[in-house]
Length: 395
Image (cartoon, rainbow, N blue to C red; front, side, top):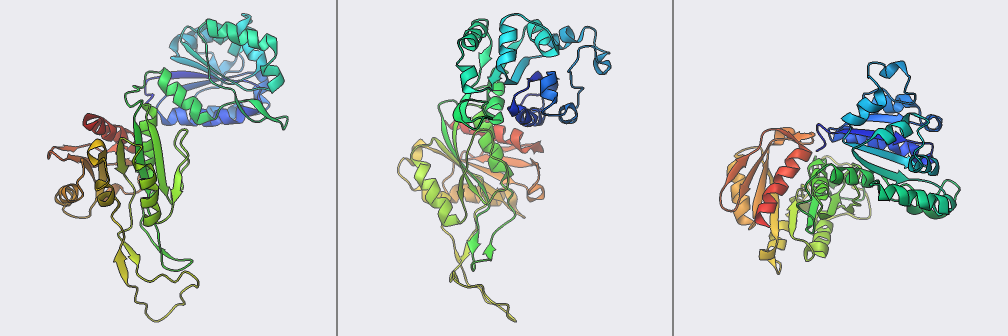
């Protein structure tokens, strides 16, 4: 999403400097070229080697360093190259120095040379943030076109709960994506995405499930947020970090997922069922004691509730786009088309099982008009954007 974009990340001596490593990692995941510029105080909190490893570029602390000797006038060369300067965390000291035009280290020198977009994520004690001098300097920078994100309320380094805490890295990433031109074409839309694989209990320690990693559902949720949508992510047994600023609604069983979907259904424009929902559940569940090992065990199963069929019958069906997934080991397109019709879907995503659990996928999109679009093998985040492009057409 940030391919061919160059971002300079300034890191100053606030305790939140350790979170800047996450920012670099996420920016690299999104395809950006990242250069980290640190103040000397910041190097006492996080070693430059950490940022060099994550970014793949030399870390700039001193403009006279031999590491950047191949740059002619490095603070000018890099400033011209950059699409965005982000300072996170930004201390009261760095904000005040830039506002007063002081350039006494690599970061302040680069900040004054920068003509591209600029974003500051402050982090400091409440008394410092509310100090009239800092307030005046923040006002000066805003008037000069610098954009601020945060600070927010939370636990500070001093132990108090108040304003001054740096916003979380994923919120900063979302703001960066917005500033660098990610189309906000889904802003104002509300989507529900399911992810992961449901579990059906056999006894207190065993269950029936599948191999779903949840990666596709999480990619769909992230892609929609990147484009401005409000997203509810219902997550079944997924071991992945939350995408961007989303806090997943966690469920375990198919019945639990249906309940959660119905809770949000009336408030969304589209439902994308990327979760691998268990088809069967034990008819008799031994909830109190573990079943002892025997020579043989007969387990009678019954079908679970069909979530897509159920919501397709809900009031206001025509006002919502319904998207399902089909993972088949044979006759993929034929089975996907049958499922599309049977469950009254607007779009079905046929998923090649050879990429199950992978970071990439080979998908075929089939809509209710019979149009078939086969996608090449893509990273799941890119494929997710293709799916939302199709959903947007229906909306």
